[in-house]
Length: 160
Image 1: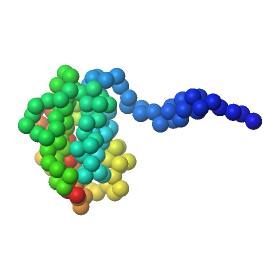
Image 2: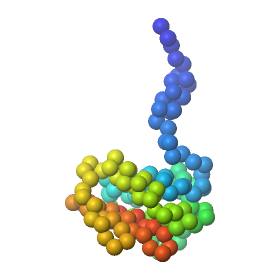
Image 3: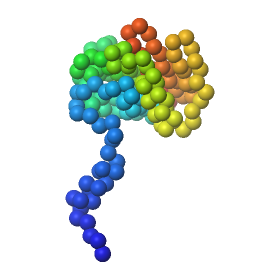
Image 4: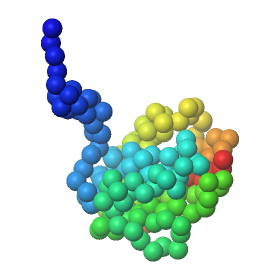
């Protein structure tokens, strides 16, 4: 009979659930990682908990607080990616702005966002393609991905 000690079992368990996007604190994520980051700090399937989860930007990613006139704001130390939250547990807007230097042409960012959207949302509504962006709308929240001259913006408008 094979017996594992608790520390070995804990190590095996932690490897199985390790975050494949884990990075050192304060490092700006690559474009193909930002969909994951967005869904970590702006969880669209849990709008009432947005205030609790946005702090992951600081605690888990090593981003720094920013004064942007919103209830919460964090950015990468180089300022290339910013996430903000405004509102309350009933109605809130969580937004991530990504500079064009990080987002590149937007293809990797969009693919990562769409992949996480398909995994994290119960249902994936038909995308509405607009001038400069894409909108997905559910009963209680809307997710918008847009591109402009400065880069990209992903916005979650949620209602509980």
